[in-house]
Image 1 (cartoon, rainbow, N blue to C red):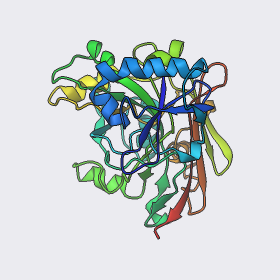
Image 2 (cartoon, rainbow, N blue to C red; image 1 turned 60 degrees about the horizontal axis):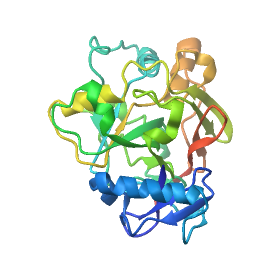
Image 3 (cartoon, rainbow, N blue to C red; image 1 turned 180 degrees about the vertical axis):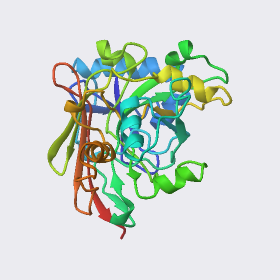
Length: 326
């Protein structure tokens, strides 16, 4: 099943989207917003699935041509956003370029932080920031959206609480982050609002791409119009979604509508490119002694899109321009 939120108020208006992303139909009589559907998933989920099947069969009343430009983030406001660093090659390259090693316990428990959840940007929304000097970067990710997750949920049971997956651009300010991390309280100012791809997808809709632990497929990233990465998302991760959910659930229960990301996608094979500029600059530093690639300047663009084995877009694309405030 594929779901989206049309721009309406703060939390959007829930629509069901056809498999080919061509048609949509309002789901307002089932749940006015995606958050409401997640809150009442046992009742709303089957009804949304039935509407999805009718839409794909051409039987849905009041179906309309989908205009992606009318879509907000699937969850414009979420109860919680937890992001990790599950791909060792990404962390290793960035840390080695700074002369640092991986944490001693990196492979024993996942690195995670809590980011902004109250204002996810739409897939095509301009990213407005205070200064180019802050080291503006993108990070390509796939995030899970959970239902209610009980306190103490173990990793081998956590995946059953995943309701949806979404594409995510974790906007990062690289000039600010190192100083924040050295103070040991973690990210804050260096992590502004993130953006979500237009379409949320249920695990069953992913088919063989979802193995119960990781989502496979090819994450392609374009920076300033040029392809920067074509990364396989289902390999080279030290931890899976269940691991990260269980790690956080050790001391907290999750409200339905919690997002959990694995961090910037990255492969051990450098030839596939990168899912953020920070990693490209780290590779350049390790090979050449200094980075050549500039972080984003105002007016620059980024495009992120995840594809299945047949080359179909899974979540729609994130395509954004960076601009100053005002």
